[in-house]
Image 1 (cartoon, rainbow, N blue to C red):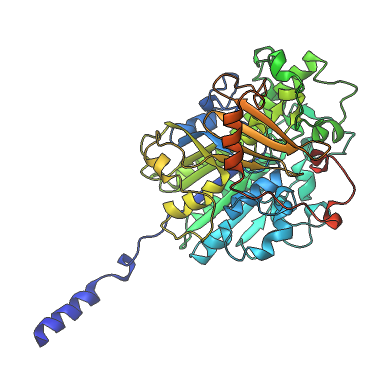
Image 2: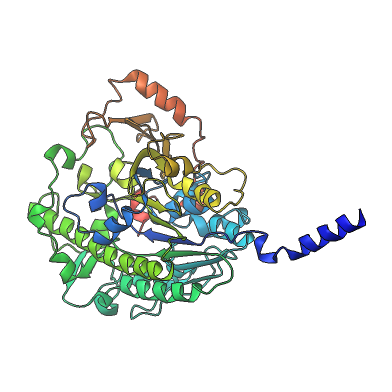
Length: 494
């Protein structure tokens, strides 16, 4: 017996310490601002996105990904919480800064920190690039304190974060209401901010390659957010005549009582020299071309980051996520912007590549949501998830792309607006001026451009979707102190 115990002890001592647990995978998370599903890999024939198309060929493409709120800060709040909005602040751009104190470490970067990861946020990950909330977003309190190992923007000619966010060529900042919504500068990629973000991301990846601890590196790009500004070479990729115009019914302001808005971000924050894309088809083509050029520009910058990762991790052991915070209407419903609950405002790209992915390049048509990203990443990394997340892991769709959705997709907006999206239908619930309920019901099987409201002709569908919508309580109205002077919901957004 003594001999047996002695041999057992020697055997245990001979096991190397590093065999106790495998290293958890690293994560590269790429956030893009205002990107709708206008990628070649997602069926947009006019798109020129070779880098993202190549990445999509190695990833799972989620063609029906929906965000929880159609504005930058609120969508990112839902991403980081993994939860639907539960208070009015969660659907505004200040939601992270004003409510983070109640989250504890149950937010995406803090949770990974708690489980041994180093966490980095470069560019625009929370609403404020670099994570500061003071003047020009350059100083003041942290937006999400204690959650990132480091949160920063690169040193650039634009200097402050708010100026880099809305920057024109060579360090020129936006002058609200005075500078144009479009710019094509005949110069290098570095004339615009995203090239500087890509440079910094490549440097950081090279530093992280030797890190002993696993890392979560979030890189946030600015384009195609307004202004639609990019080097002229990217405009030259796009013939405006080849970018599809909308059918007149899809471009019309809804005739029914609706949640339409007057495109305040586009019309009030930028000078249009008297031109209106709703009345001027040539200007509408110019705007759409500028958006497409901005997408091509950011595609090239993301490609540089992915190339650097490929060189550092040729075996492909890093989890990579490409996510956009919402879409953007380019004239649908006579809206030029987001800030509404229509399909092209809430639908945006989500692509995920993980080691051992089955059927890379295959698309999943399952309805998935931004809140699903948090539990998906904890699942892929072998971590527990915080209690109470509303999202579901997308591992079933990663393992088998034909797996159907686990739930409908929900969206929230100001003034009590809510929506629910099933496989074929979308219901938008709001209130009319007198406070009575108001509904918009769209059938994507027969009317994918949302040109008809079926609320009056499909009472059973309406009743069923209203019942599903009621499973989540309405958001409480903001306090009088926080709501301030009466404005239209979208006019408050940058």
